[in-house]
Length: 182
Length: 213
Image 1: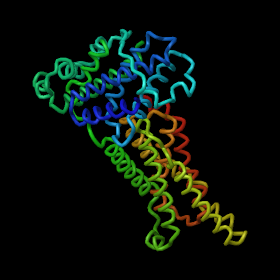
Image 2: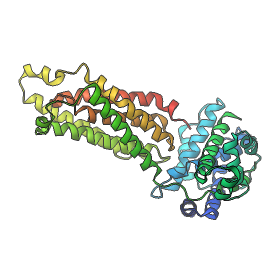
Image 3: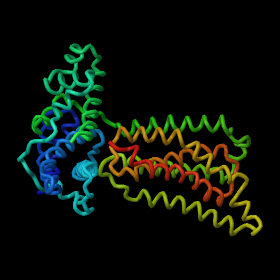
Image 4: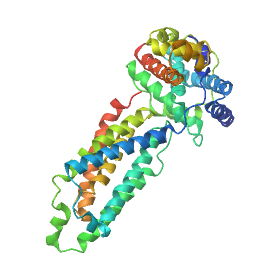
């Protein structure tokens, strides 16, 4: 089962990285269920934080997608990111770090799946509103309204490459602001 | 925002991911950092005046090979540690083997020399300044490599910082060997290594703070 999840998700990601947005969306949706099961098992004492970490990990996966090498197992890559975000979260809330074995089992990440998303405590939509205007507007137009980069460039008066850069920087800033609010 | 909506947001307009980001960032970091170190060496210390004659000696090339392979090896280590989940595999072992090879060469040269010469073979003329100067020359490469890593995603921050420091040190030692008049393998085995370990230790200490994302 783990093998098939690895193959299926990897195939979606590879196509997604090449520019196939439907495949990429399928990858993120499939991954979210695995991440949720993975995080929930490790945060039994903090069930309210689970969805926040799932979202934080998804955002990290997206922001760092250029570091994925198709020669590498997807499980190892995703697990390292999820583990990093989980440990970071536990450090921030001042909780004792999990025992090494508890989170070091990479192979298990894609084995469980949990499709019951709880409410996240943090509202990413609200955090988005706090981004600087030059990052917020390109994100709203391109990522929420689904406008093209060219249309967004026309609306904002930015160059197309500035639109792309600001979307990227804005999502990184969003990831940073997730770390500060809880 | 619900997770499904967030996923839709991330996927919408995502386009193709930028390719070869790691290669590009490391090429820039080593290129500019190495150039800055070379300029610093040329202005502050000067290229050794007998470079042409020295280039005829095997020991000169042993120094270049030593620092060059350590640069390559630590570059591979740093690049892997910039990628979540990538393994170091045999890279640390290969780096250690290079150091051991220089130690073996140093041992042979000590065994082949008179006891009275040992001191000068190990200490040379410049042991007091060699590690310090290598550490100074490593600063621009260190900064540049940390910049390269910041655009990637290291998850083992202490190790990644250490690899960045070792890479900076090895690169600086390579540049320094164009100035350094020392030709003894025992000297290279001790003082060059020490010079490279200074930035490596700094990276180990600073990694978790500087590389967090």
